[in-house]
Structure formats: structure tokens, C-alpha cells
Length: 196
Image (cartoon, rainbow, N blue to C red; front, side, top):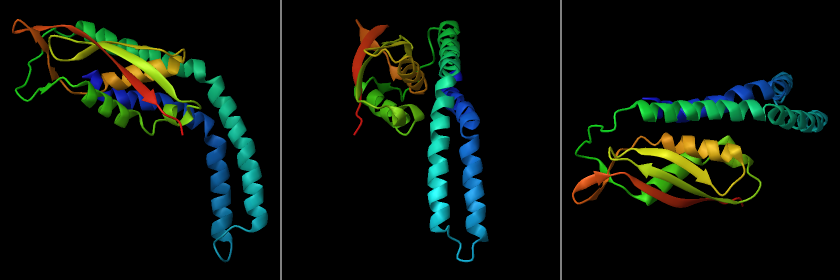
């Protein structure tokens, strides 16, 4: 199922852009690693260290410019990936075989898994301010999270990556029941990204 590979595909969007934008930084590291290897004591001289820092600052500036230039491409790739996931949702049968070990739905378990998947991502590491978003979704009668919406931010990348991350959670939950029948339920919870 596409859900299983969702976080891998999301990360590939970032790795393609990083590959393009990090080329010069990788070459710079190789250059100074070679100098280090050739030196008698296997360390860089003070002069080389200063030169490396100066060059790496210039390259970092170029990296951020490259990343900004590629932002529309990244957003479009994330949108395309999200659309594939949502289209698959519509195409899948409404009733999956619920296993006997399906867990009762817990917003806390979703929040914890979401946090674990998001921590260390490029997106979170680049946030400059703390952010509190609202996530809403349906817990369908088959126990699968569907129709994810992210609100309280204008940052399109945060919205797309958050939705893709939630879709990548592979758990099937016990659906919420009314009169002993599974029902589609709309659920909402806040998520905070704290920048220290």
C-alpha cells in the first residue's frame, strides 16, 4: 500500500533537492578531507581551517538560495504525493479486514507517533519559530485515518508534510461505534512544534 512508503517518498522529495543543493558543500568537504589526509599529523592547519570556514559560509548561503529556488518544485512534488495518497483512499474498499489486534483509537498514540516521525526531518529542523497547528481527520468505519486536513498555518510545506506524515502511520484502529455499529468519526487535535 502507498501508505507504507509515504514517509520514504516524502523524504525522497527532500533528498532530491538536497542532492542538487549540497553538491558544492560535499565537494568542499572532500577537498579538505583530502588535505587533512595528506597532512603529516592528519589535521588541518589553522590557515586551512579558517579557509574552510570562510568557504563553507559562502556555500551555505548558496545552499539556502538553491533551496529557496527549488521550493515551488518541492511543494508541487509534495502536493502530487498527497493527491496520490488521497486518490488511493477513495479507490480502496470502505471495509478493510479489521484484525483482532486493532488498537482502540487514541489521539495520544497518534500524536506520539506523529512526533516521532516528524522529529529530525528537514522541515522541523528549519523552522525558525514555534508553531501550533490543528489536525483534523476522519477515522473511517474501517479503522483507517482518512481525509486529513491541517490548519492554523499558512506554511504550505508544513501542511503537506504533516498530512503525509499522518498518512504514513500504518496503524488500523478499532472504529468508533454507535449503537454497536462502526461509524465514520471526525476527530481534531492540536500539534505543537517547539523551537528552542
